[in-house]
Image (tube, rainbow, N blue to C red; front, side, top):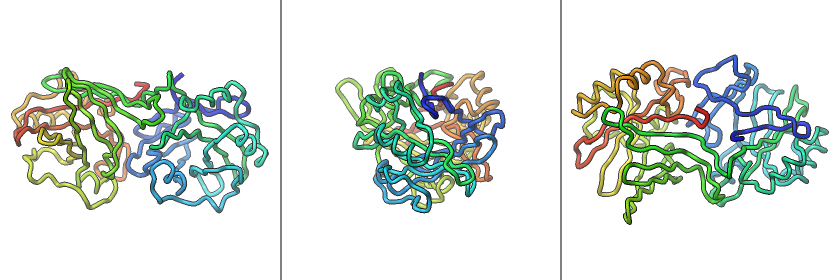
Length: 367
């Protein structure tokens, strides 16, 4: 099994394999809506049984996970003293909420069960999986420390359910996303997958390849939205590809005023939103933009005198169902709706000359 399973009452499955959806869908019991950029730990809100559930995280959680000092306090709640790290809360209303905590051991989980007078959530089989924590943990930090989430659900202010979240992986690996970039009428330039690796010292990592190169993406702090870089290996040569989000994208997503405007570049006037840039030192650069439809593909290709990145069938898919290509769903047009699929395309520049037009197709692990 791959994916999240939440256990209650001695091993009973409470929910599993939640679905992300670009917009609210009343037909999905646990409907997750991607709002990436709003919170650095959990990039979604949830609609459990048609109610909005929003998340926020403690100062201790952000210190453990991101080594930052921001975050909330849960001191106003009834907190079990045996918990060493309170992770955060998910709130539906003032008296209906869930408090999340780090599960250190079965002994601690038993203590929480006794403190709140709730059934212990897992059985002996699940307990044995805790011996290899990397196979069931959802979060781990830069020090290689893993975290399993426990949760207490409060209904009308009363502790009503004790849960444990297990993020199952096969062989220690969970595939979160798959991606490929296309060029020249549909040829695949690069393809790979975003995975949580077996190595506990590694964060989520995207590995891919082109015809001549292997590429490993790794986390890197410094940019508020694009926190990664790529290590590109070709034969015995290794180079680093750096990434940055644009000032325009930072302003839209996070209300920031820093960043590059790319005024020095030859920017196609048909593009409304430039998302960011990547570059290799003393090498090529790539400017990324929000692709709003098939007509923009045609306009950009004409402007730069480059082949369109996909064939007519795929162009029709971009037009009819852009969610099949999206990086994530965001309020990219600042209309108040966070269900717009952000499709990314790019122009590669070499010595200030546009050399390639690329389209990115990004799918989730279960697509």
